[in-house]
Image (tube, rainbow, N blue to C red; front, side):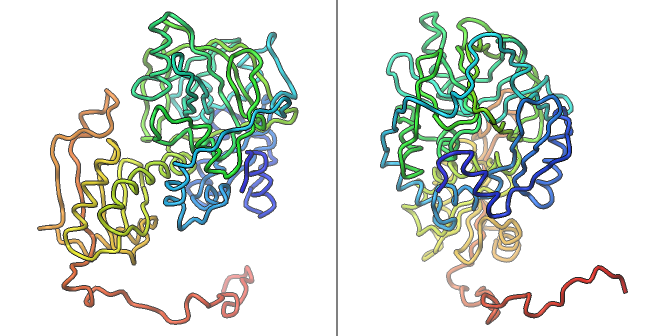
Length: 450
């Protein structure tokens, strides 16, 4: 279990899973280009030690695999989703401390957001440098309830940033409540947050639940929190950076474009303005970057959605696992089927779990839902198109205004074997394969051509 971002990096390094990049890289496009190429090949966590003009090293692709997230939370990968569902209802109070590593350096004046924060530019048409791995912490102006969420932040300069938020997102609802009284909303942007808080910030827990307490439950020990320096908020004591400020009421500026998780652009549009009041950090702070739509983003967004689907479908069939391979606009549910009606019931329940669920595939328990080749194999060999494809017209899914029309209708695919033909569809087995060590059989590579 790793309760800090710094601890997670050390853990990965000790396991020889963290790939270091000692060569200097340009934060404008080159850093993300290297990251994207790694994601498409070996998909390893990366630490860029020398980023041109940057005040900090940059870590990225850290939670790039589901197993790394499970390990960070001290959970088994195969039971990650049901474990999170069980722990979610066991909210644990966080701990407030007086001193914190994130306050080793405190700047309440003389700072420049374009100098004191690494200026990483991701995509060709992006409207500048962005914070892409910032967990935003705020309190509801009426109830005082804490919320943590992921929001992109465009770095303008000085104390000036633009932040993307809007209802129905919880932070957008908090801001809307503050703006009704013409008040600014205090916000802290946490970079290098504890892994459990990163997951909690991406979760779909109800608006009246405290995401700090859920994060404490998920990591099995209270989050260490400390009072911020210039805003009335608690922030993670062991974070790498915290940017304090306030979202100004009744003010919007054009933000964007930004290359989003759909692998397309969110075009420039009016968004909120956040005035920075302080930057605090560790002395040797490490800056975290997440590529929208990359493996790390998909893990952090996908696992909470898998949990929501699990909650809905568990009443209809025993669940082996839930996965969101390919993209989070769909899911694959692996079930222990006992009758032929269960697959359709599971599909409908999964579609109802979250509006984004547009394509739902149900497979048997002998299919790994996280393996896209396995899922396609099941569709190709076990689906009966004439009766096993269900289309629900007109229902919306992803609701961003510029693409809403393309996300209408939902489809369910029953890729389970018919009960009457289970013996016919029973998969081959290869005795001894699980115990076999290939190094005992394969000669080492010599590097010479023949």
